[in-house]
Length: 309
Image (cartoon, rainbow, N blue to C red; front, top):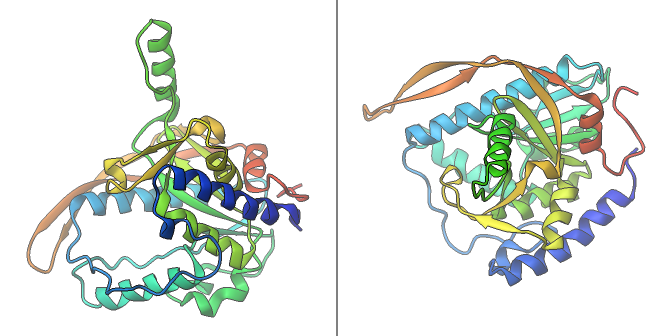
């Protein structure tokens, strides 16, 4: 149903991405697009214990995914969103974490990075139980049937407020480095995101959930944006564990939803098995209004189909 040109353009874009990032000093092993990943040359380092920052970021991510999923369930498109990403709440230091961590590493090496949501045709007979706590290999045929996939990220900013304030500052003659927030794409994710799309042949987009809006961009546009080399900004933000991250202005994508009711916040407390107490704040609820036309544009930039039309 999707245009055959989508994956052709995606594959061509990876060549340019590798060339551009190589010139930027990115190691070659992070630019090997296509096929399964290489077997590890040494034993991976297993995280020993989570911290409140990790737990808070995970809570933000869970909230962002739930907001977007609920928004899609109630949209006029009738599309069926199914949770597909890792849903295991096990944390470093918990019993069984080491085995779980190594299994996930191997699954990613073979199949790529699972997106958070898969979208199916209205009326599809499928439920979240199809994927819950199951190995990727056991659900591959079902994942292949998806219309599109979505990777969901969260942000602690209000994007519309950020852009308004920065625009006002610039108009007042204040030097402003950037006028809008960015989609934050970790360089290490590029090959594993592509690996999944190559294997499953499902178009995928990237969404960033802010407290006042949701922006999205298709991964084809991300790859072509990086491959152009124009205005490419690589940073190491604290929120990404200081990993090399490509910053793409959200204006390169589309605003797919606006917030009509701000979320509340609650304090969450977690005690480790050794007795350390971590406390963090987690958003809850919040209401957004979807822009179906913008959603279709980022989901299927080369498509011959439109959800709900």
